[in-house]
Amino acid sequence: MAKIQLNGKMLKIKENLSIKDLLKKFKLNEKSIAIEFNGIILPKENYKKKKIKNRDKIEIVHFIGGG
Image 1 (cartoon, rainbow, N blue to C red):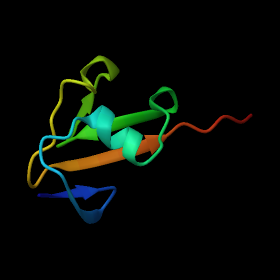
Image 2 (image 1 turned 180 degrees about the horizontal axis):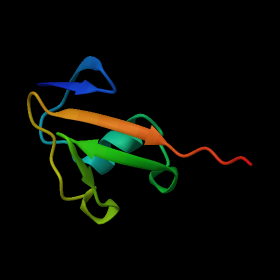
Image 3 (image 1 turned 60 degrees about the vertical axis):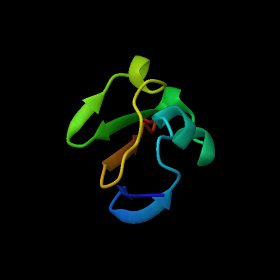
C-alpha cells in the first residue's frame, strides 16, 4: 500500500497504480481536469505511464465553465 496526499487529504491506495487508474477509481473525467503531480503539472499523455508511489502529492483541479 502507498500513502499519498490527494487534494490535501492522506489516502492509502495500491502501490503502482497509474494516474489514469486513480482517475477511474474516483470516476473523474480526464478531459475536464488538470493534475499537479509532486508540484509539476502532468501532461494528459503521461496519465497512463505515471505510476503512483508512497508519499506522492497529487492535486486534481476541475475545470468549470461559465460566463
